[in-house]
Length: 483
Image (cartoon, rainbow, N blue to C red; front, side, top):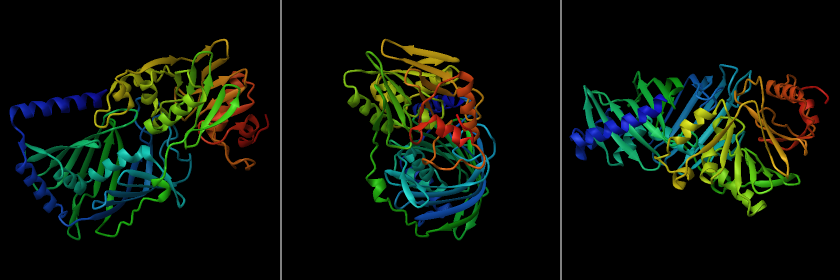
């Protein structure tokens, strides 16, 4: 993959430059950074708020493994960056720009999202309610400290080197455990580009390129009017900025519920030897076999998946989790695969995604060591092409494709024929019990019904990997039909 090669090239080039002695150290780098800080008007800058609109993408939600992230429209966007307290607030009004792939956005209409971070905490707002989002912490720290003023302030606190390339000065530094960066500074002292690497639960060390252009003076603070960013080799953001305000009160405080958050896996027995593991935004299912366990879904990041694996050990002590089945390649559903591999589990993925997973899971998380890096193990994968059965004297577990979905290719569901249990992700997320069906049926729900009927599954209950356990009748009611 091109972006993996870019990381290796960057590292090799950096090492060569150091050996050649062409990097200046200490006072030289500090002088360049202080000059840039003055040119940007950042010397007394404690907070900055900027707003605009543009386009974006749903990072990690590609329709096919290895494809570009699905495009979205961003009709309103703002960030408050609080450098004094290491905090950030982002608000965005977004809509889909393409029908396929994931995003969490409806197929029609707009959705507003509010994301926050301070110190070691990240959270979202659901209405006015704070919802802890620890998986987002690394990317939000990166966004704060790779902003034009933030990256200068961050570099001033770290050992840094500087080199010249034409009329550009390139300052390199690492913020331990967070990111590594190369800051491209023009002859006018303005930050033109930041090449950085940040940790990711799926991709490992992930390259990011952020380009700043069209600087204007906003009350003594110089800020770009265009921000373009790519991550993982594909665009993620293209913003046009029309409003910048400096040193307004940020008022970003960590809610008590976020400070007290811990990952919990709450087990509910679905059948003898089968458990529904809830307790968070993403669920898993645990299946007991004769001498081992099968886990369906290891989601989000180490923290969530470690809690799920710990609950599996508590429920069935003495039997290892030997297989972990991944529903699809979207990052929220595959972010714990490294965790599972660290425990020695074999990962069961779609054959369409297997070559891509083999490449990205081999890429280390060197910026911030994860469970897989600490274990010293390598991920072992099995691909499913169409249908695959795992069985022993205890039970049969069938893994099969959800065909024709606009959500993802290589989209899999798990069927337990004796228990008549169907395990699926994103194809159907149940609403509240007895809630009326939507005016327009969700296309993913309709597609799941079509796949149940295509495969002639005699479903009794559904274990969704979001939301509550439901019945086949619940699903059919959601699409305006009777079973």
